[in-house]
Image (cartoon, rainbow, N blue to C red; front, side, top):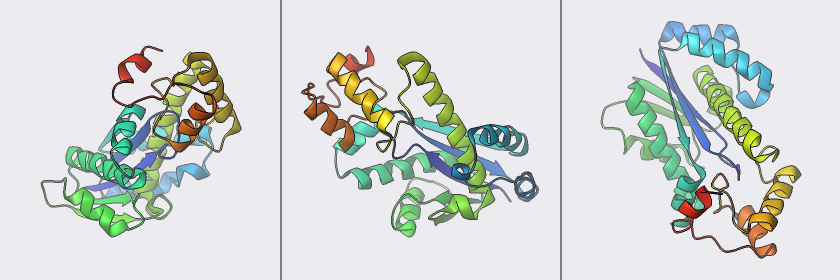
Length: 229
């Protein structure tokens, strides 16, 4: 049996991409994941995630990673209610991963408050028969999802490190991080517009832009200009 696990990293961040990863294993591979000690990526140190990610990629038959860039999220969010649109976006991306890996059964960490609805949104996008187990905190329950969460988090960590090398230390990239907020305020004071790696549709970003008197950025028309900053 082909078994897939899918999870995301960076959903709530105001800086950087949303990374969604899927892995494919058989029953033997699933047992190997348990043996190497995979668990929820948030409970692991960055060093341990890196170590486990290397081992996971030796176990899996296949894996697939999709990075949803901030401007892609902005376009979706600006068209409707943020959470509803973001949930549908994640469901579509997870469906693409399922189509790529073609499992018999897929375990996914449900982004929607209603896991069954999230499952149906995924199934709408998959043109073949597949069983989907959609649950909250699936990364804590199912080792195959834990492994996917590790791969997603490691990949996002690498993206964040790359951005920091180019633009400076902005902390975790999450709205609750004072260093992230300080970076955003400083950027607006200097440039008057957000860079392409910031999710301009996020409430945090909008409030900072307004408080600092920066130029209102229209998601579609300003993309080409901000990409050059």
